[in-house]
Length: 170
Image 1 (cartoon, rainbow, N blue to C red):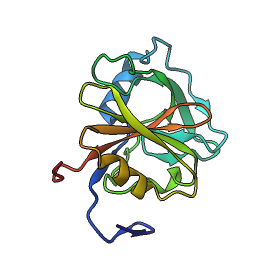
Image 2: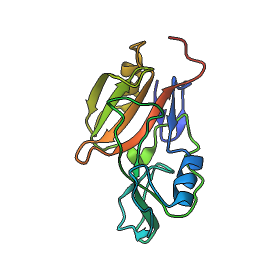
Image 3: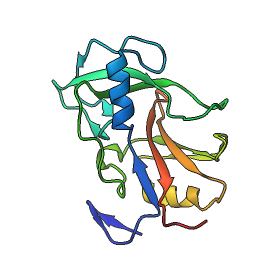
């Protein structure tokens, strides 16, 4: 499987999931994040902050929030809560579910694999020069892997979630 820019030459066996726009709106509306912290005030981006709402890199001057986020939907000893940057105002989110976000390529990342119970069942460090699609395919070759989270290496922050495409059999 190969890509050239944003063109797909073969169907993806995975789907990219950014933070849910509905969940982010609920956090903003309540004024409290998943860590119990006050969400506001917004801050001005310096530029370079990875935004988990749209999977882009913040541009200098954009209004952003830093919130605690828990990317798990059930209890687990591995269910971490950590800091993520998001747009302060609503944004369109990430719509290219079939493509790994270009702006998140080229950075060292940890890919953590989880089973249906939320237990870690594997993982892999990815170098900035690694083909992320090949890493994802390698990890999803294990039938016990239900989903994958990518995390920033230095700060450990959650980046995004990867799920198998609905049409992929195990």
